Length: 305
Ligand code: PSU
Ligand code: MN
Image (cartoon, rainbow, N blue to C red; front, side, top):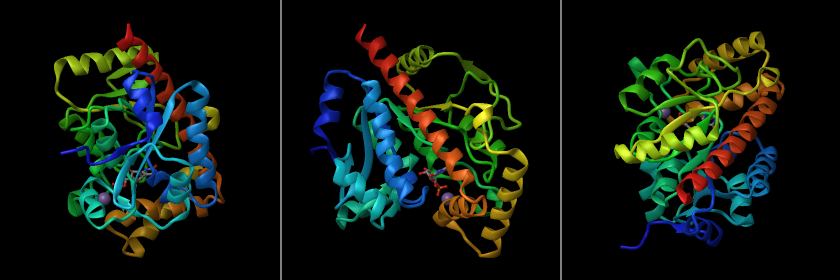
């Protein structure tokens, strides 16, 4: 059977020549950022990589076909059309009915790894939701990382989630969590959470060596690289705490549940912060795209040596 996805010429060529490639997700564009900033952001993330000599591979399901690497029209569609939020389990359904879907971290990591891409940059990971001991609401981002050999660069998880439980689940799933120039797990808008990390690295080259060792032991998980934003770029902590609490209360009061929870909270927080959280969100994503580019470059150098 042929591959259940298409790979753009640019991405296929880069992979064939072992040149650096970084995967990018589309749910952050379709459901995580408001229009029209989302289209600007999608283009900017790709441009940051292109300027570094790295090939971007934005991933989405369009007309039933998972696509690894979008053309300009594909990027426009994920930003402007209504799309299903597509986790791994939604892929076969969208494929069978020729539907459109914006891929989450879970499905982007899964598809990118299948295509042979080794690095993926995003904003924040999904994780264990607060109250999960009753709702069982845990993002498939975690279980997908357990079966997708790809390095995912994020700024940790948002404090709307249960960060402690998320870190516990990553431990159970045997997904390495590595702080990039930090010994503390970041909480997305804030540089630090209260949770220390066991492992810290100082360079992209060091991460590439961990990837090579991970391949050598053959366990097949992804690697979570936590990349905190510089302290002068973080959201003001008191305002952050107040608005996050408000957003959680609103989701509860409105009975939001299931896959609508994350988009609801993100949208609420952008509105309630008068856009401040959005600017920080974009800084975070840009930082992660840059670090992903550096890791992909280091990976190519290491594996071409
Ligand atoms: N966290 C963010 N921004 C996002 C998301 C999470 O800070 O855009 C998106 C990602 O696509 C992630 C998904 O994979 O939400 C997780 O959704 P859920 O919690 O329903 O699994
Ligand atoms: Mn969920």
